[in-house]
Image (spheres, rainbow, N blue to C red):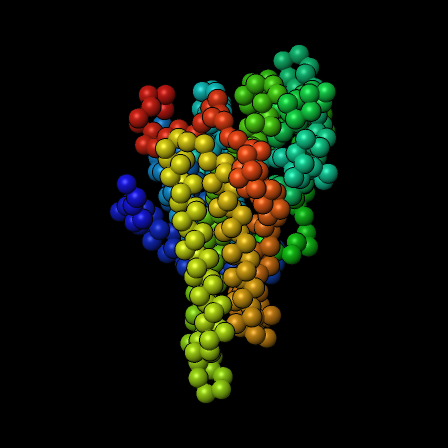
Length: 404
């Protein structure tokens, strides 16, 4: 049975996050963006609100809410700024949900629980200078040495690079196996040989912390191998299903922010003797934003429903990420156009929306990668098979595995 309404709990979360964004992000985001400052206190406040483990089961320190509640949180956060939705996407979507899916019990106790409580921050280390869409081109290696692995290499464009405590790092344990020789490791920041460096001069998401990771003879115990050797590519792809879901949800918040700013300006600004909102070409841009928002939400919540059911959702999540991010980019561009010359100035937020909207069209699968994926599904060249380990269906109490 289709249900397009929020539950009481979801509506409560939406209002709580919106109020938080209005009070604690909106008044300061212009300054943080201008100074390329990541405000770590926002993460601490999200932890106080029990939002750092929204969809992690309560037995692992989370709030035990469903995956569409995570989408609501991401949408409302990105209405404030992409930087903070990105932080939640990485911490929860790419890291914690991957631990929930693939970590053994000891790893969940050591890493997932403190991350879900917000006591520790998790990040994701896949992209390299020469390995973006082509994951198999990564150069980082992990060589077995007794009961440890020694990691060498570097990662680029890593969100939360300077503030995260734990990183999921992907490296080759057997290059002769190509992508089947990639393995995943949990690496702690204070491990000798590990360092990071923030990237300056970004076009957008300037209030976020993004940069490089360096691994020089980093010794990682075998207990920190996630899954089995050679499962890294599969784990990375499953992680992207979760990360892309949160990115798509956040894009809805970006569209919503563009609509709110544009509507306010349409009522404030007059030309040729009437509010600019009365001009049909301006109305056309507003209408496109609204259509993009509604279509994107439908795609996002369908993907979330599949996650709640414990079903494979790679195709649906890819489509949601592709379309929602494209709509957000178009909406931001139209918002700047509606504001005219003022839209080109940081006196209003729409120029920031436009700068921020470009990155999600690139990361976690470019629009071109998602276009190819969707075509291959339709043509029958691509088929999703059930993963050996799926995210737990919601509510989690249905499975004794997640109940102590």
